[in-house]
Length: 81
Image 1 (cartoon, helix red, strand yellow):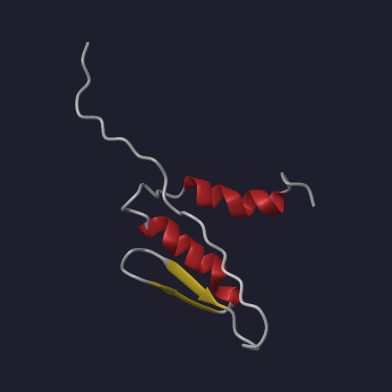
Image 2 (spheres, helix red, strand yellow):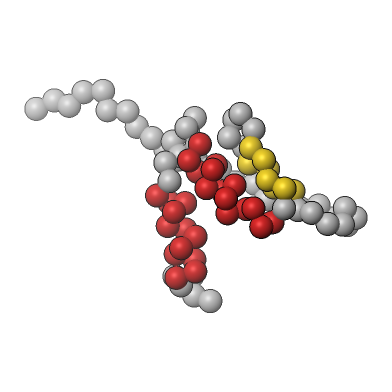
């Protein structure tokens, strides 16, 4: 599957377009939760951290996938001539 296939584009485009300025990641967290529903138990805490616990055998190695959901944001305070 090509990196630019429609399948990847349909996943990456909504994630890229979601608003996620640091401290206001609610939209991205909600989208990640929707996308992760098929993987197991999904929950979100007050800091907008999303946790996905895969159902199944608890034996064997555990894997943690960790990533940031926020993006850089700026506030325009004044526009001068």
